[in-house]
Image (cartoon, rainbow, N blue to C red; front, top):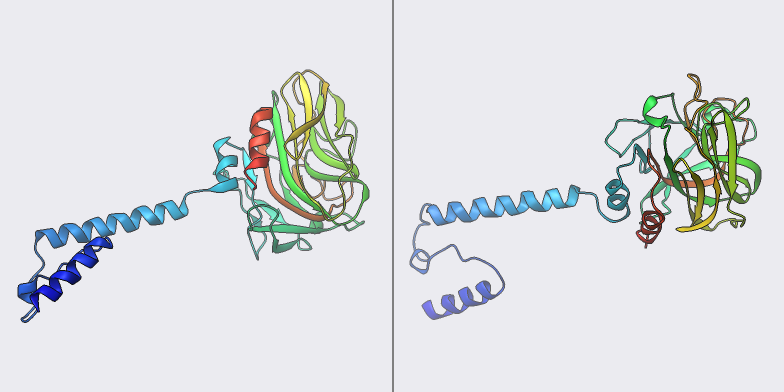
Length: 287
């Protein structure tokens, strides 16, 4: 009998298991745990804690975005409620309009995303919004990025924007579509400058869009590659105290631009201009 238990112990040991019961105890009452048993239990508990921490740590696309320290980051993972949580750690939670559909299939990494209805009447019910905050009012540089799947072509729709979009010179910064052509716009020295990608995106295709301004150049990217750039200088300005962040439309309740029709996912805003290499890395991290 002892040889059979010895063989079982060898098999368990080969599988990475620990046999805590001694052969002498098999025929009698179990002995009280000794110091080695207590140590093994403590090690197991530590390993479980480490595994839980690893599960909670950001990974994949999320980890790549957070490595670049966004000011605000909206993953749209919610399935109910009105709060669009900011995953940057800065607490800039936004509000879902009541007509924004939550929990649709995500565009990156199999998560979730938000669906916008393309309503022609505007209003807060149809997009994600946040009141003005200085945290989203950089002056020296900015990066805006998001993933989109367009359901229909509209003449002029905001994807990610901030500030006054009802009077000239429009929003201090915005990433938008003119028909199906991605464009970016910044206001510097109280004058607006735009740059167009020069290529149309197609209905029902998933695309990564990004724009950066570094104080000297305004650049726009499509699927990780720079599409176009234009020289412009000066601090970003024309911020107001009424209109804040808008995702899926402008930052006011009666936006000049239309409501986007389609899915938006993984929106991030930075107070620096990410390099072309980092933009390409973000796109590549989606695969």
